[in-house]
Image 1 (cartoon, rainbow, N blue to C red):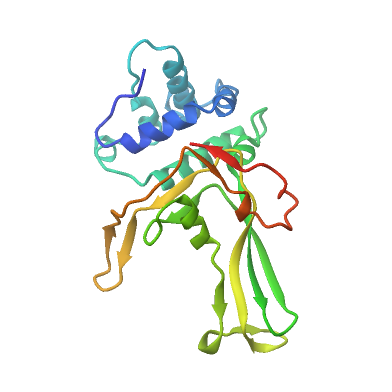
Image 2: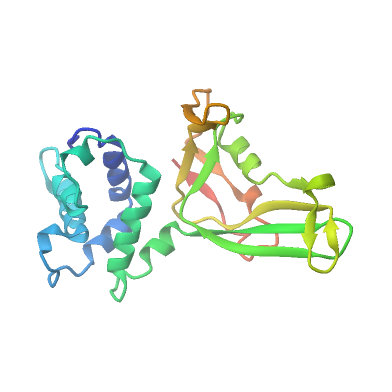
Length: 240
């Protein structure tokens, strides 16, 4: 039936509805034990359970006041536009913490966590450095990119370290090298954060990028997964 807007909470409403429409996630939110919570009605898990239940069964639009109250927000907070990426991370951290030691443990990681490798490889000597990292969302450039694919091309673009920017190794000193990122695995549910705001280094003010940008209802990201990854043979086709 939709969600009522509390002021400037369109980002919150769209995120909550996106999460609600993931049946696996909704099911595991319902599995959260909440009966022994102090001030039960004021906790985030209970507020999220109630909100999902009302979205599922109510015959009229649903309020998010209980949820925002559980964050400790007041009227000023709901009237202020918050960053949806940051808000999503905080919400997932709170829910994941509550899921520990319960049948729902590992739900956030299983649904939303992917991995990539940051690498540096010297071109003239046998030296390579790799560091695995995990992500729960990916920030993609919009500036200078026409669509999702060109943003991923930019994300995976190899940087050449040479001349005054040579890479300093422990054993071989300064060396020409290549630096970049290779994805190892994308998660079942992929959050893409489009960087619509950029910093003007002349004025140090942020400005909005209003360039035309396309995203298709279906995308396939297999080409961006390292062929050496043990997960390279999975199908990374996503429906918007």
